[in-house]
Each structure stands twice: as structure tokens, then as C-alpha cells.
Image (cartoon, rainbow, N blue to C red; front, side):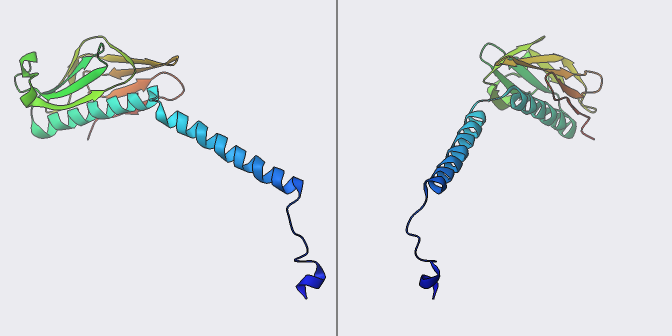
Length: 165
């Protein structure tokens, strides 16, 4: 019955159908490549958020453990390290006190090499601005010493992270 109605009589695809399928596959492939390329390169936004989260983490450690902590920035090697700093001096920057080292992967400049975080309120001293540059985009991370608040400025997005309590 279906054969008589012509349902199975069609034996192939028309040129238009093949063209539409190839066009859809091309669009999906190109969009996948664009997304993959954007994911593989570090962006200024993601690096700024990572540094801010590490600053907040170090501040939380200082408050909860009731010990000074410090972040030492090395713009030449594009790294920063987080230390326990019981004495509050650079003599604490030894492997035994090292908590974390992170590689930034993009250009970084700081106004001072070290950021000191104090307890009980998480206030800071030392560096107050960290500038990140990559591919023509710039983000400035500002640390407010009296409160310990951290703010990302630059580009389209602005984000403020408040105190930890």
C-alpha cells in the first residue's frame, strides 16, 4: 500500500537537501572551532578573577588561622606565591610556609611586590594595584588596605568582592 502511494519510490536525496545538510555541518564545525580557540587562550578576565579568588582565599586563611599571610608577586616570571607569614617579614618566604604558587600566563605589573594580609579583620598593606594586560585588554585589580576589599576594573565588566563575612 505504501509503495503504491509513492512513499518508497524516492531513492535518493535532492541537491538542495544535500546542500542544506552540508551547510548545517559547516556552521556547527566553524562554531565549535571558534569556541575551542577561545577556551584555549587565557583571557584577562579569567586571570583577574583567579588572582582575586586567591587574594580572598589568603584573606580567609589569615582570619580563620589568626596568622598573617602574604602574597608575593613576581611580574618577570608571571607568577605569584601565597605564604603563611607569622613574623610578618619576607623571611617567612620559605618553602615550609609556601601554600600555593600560581602562573599568570599574561603580562602583569604591581605597584609593590608583596601584599600583606592581617588578622582579625583581613585588612592589608603592601601592593594596592595589580595590572594585567593581554591582547589589548587591560584589567586593574585594586585592593583597599583599610577594608581588604578587592575590585576588578577595566573593560566592560566590573566586579567587586566584599569582605568575607
